[in-house]
Length: 514
Image (tube, rainbow, N blue to C red; front, side):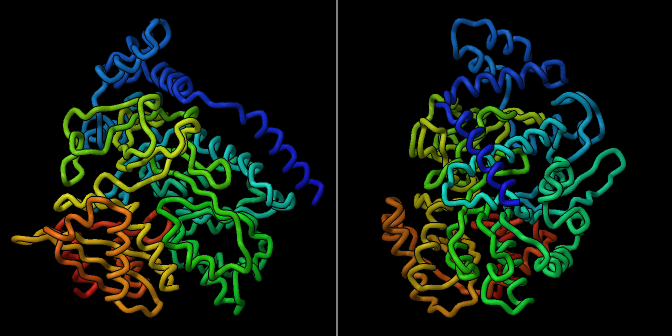
């Protein structure tokens, strides 16, 4: 079997060399939008917004940017509520050819990390194919990681996601996106895929973890993929079950962890305590709306997927385009990929093969390498704190928690921050999840000082309006129990880093024991 692994690695390497030519982000994105417009021009949406005119401009206009100007003029910007109320509700009711060709059979249930009610995101056949293509490209990208052994490509690939046994609603099926895509994996990948079809159908999250734990000793796992919090819980459970010191005593060939959904850095300190030796980490950006980006080489940020069914636009994340609560203004400034700048924050708009058009996904990013279209996720449009001008992003918070974990040598698994307005001053209330002992005052002082160092606006406001800080250290289980009470355990669910809505804040503070 080592021969098979060597051949696979060699084949992957050769394929990656062929694909490693320099990219032209603008040309790739123009081609992507042209394909999207062409395929959807006879849908209700395409006819309503004159896709034929946009397509003709893309194909025949001498002005290379005319097509984008017409796209912006013809098609309004949507968030989920507007998209669903005006268009997707028809798709959800079983109508064909609404915003994409044909009838939509699958809907991904997503509440993100900020909404209480579930969203129903259409997942078309074309989107499932696109996600699988990008997943294969990510495997091909492993050739850039020279330290990985050839035998890795013969090992098991554990994907910890939602149940593949979807909820049958009569005219469609709904469930977690990871469950939808795992249920449609290519036949040739089935021999590598774990936990396998039977266990993958399990809906109860605790039961699924129990079943995986029982089978863990029988599998030779090389790759693990999932949201960091749930992967860490699973590994702890396996280590305890078999009374071993680390996960490598059960899976000696574990080499790669593909993580996404949240920043891995706050988890890394505790995660590495579960390993017997270092492994390779690869970041992915897979949202309910599509596979957006992934890490293509070591020591680089993720690269946008520019040529596989997603067209990107970028809204500068500033006061001109968003209010203090992160709500977008009616007509924000939008840019194509050739118009953005490195280091600046942008909110993402996407148009996709699932029939999302100029759709505000809710995430904010910054470009770290324009030439390679490499990005870092900085947070969400609603998940930042700027009560009095402190402009505190989730990226800032993650960095402060990461450094605190290292400084105090503790495993901070979860955290959230509540911002409050008083009569004459403002407050940030931190809730930090760790099972390690730490002095709350020392931890808060360290976080505060770190934020002063990495955010230019924060120290100014700390001297004036932002005068109250508090912290409460809680067991990690408190955070997961709260999610469980909301029915958001496992899969792609994660704890929100910022709580803003009054109802959410009251529920959480009552649960956490203010």
